[in-house]
Length: 258
Image 1 (cartoon, one colour):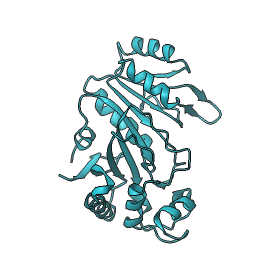
Image 2 (tube, one colour; image 1 turned 90 degrees about the vertical axis):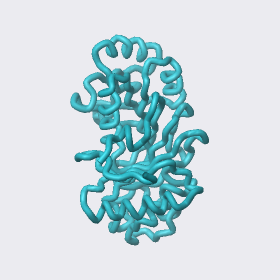
Image 3 (tube, one colour; image 1 turned 120 degrees about the vertical axis):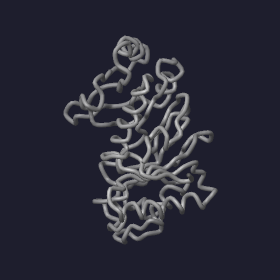
Image 4 (cartoon, helix red, strand yellow; image 1 turned 30 degrees about the vertical axis):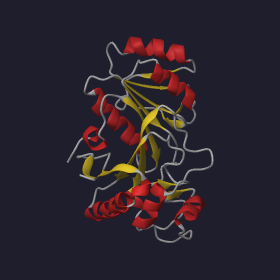
């Protein structure tokens, strides 16, 4: 039973990009809570769109397209708040926050205002698994860690739009026919394939996997099987695989390699 900071081996500071499905937003704010709890300045943001943060998720939200304006407001708020969320503007009829282009996040990082920036770098429409479209994910070049997230809830479910975002693309990557039962092997393929969840990750970024929704013994066992598949394949490039549950305690149940 470990913290996210320990499980992900986060040290010194940097930009963390979250991609995939099955709990990215919950992971975004839980990680921000841990990091800001160490008295570090943390920014949560997106290169796509996220739901407008609740006050519990983030007590400060800055909306502005201009980097200079965001940084000016952030420096004032950071005197009393360690965690800030920001985007270019809100979309009130959709209750969402539109994010920044990746180069803007590069500029914010270069300013030195934040020790940590956590980026939700694609969307999944609330599904536990996904495959990225041609334009996804949108990962800033300054990213030091890329975390591929999947929801273990999908294991044993049919490959349909109820359980997968873009099931036709999931089918192309995994070889499963649409409607077939999703297996641990298929989830591992989504994480390993060069057109899968971590597509376009910067060459120097540390690759990690977070197998979420391990809130039952069966799902924990499925997570262990996927973790072993990822670790055994050296070419996958994963530095570590975490099994956990962002909505419950502990956030991290196990990680591999130990």
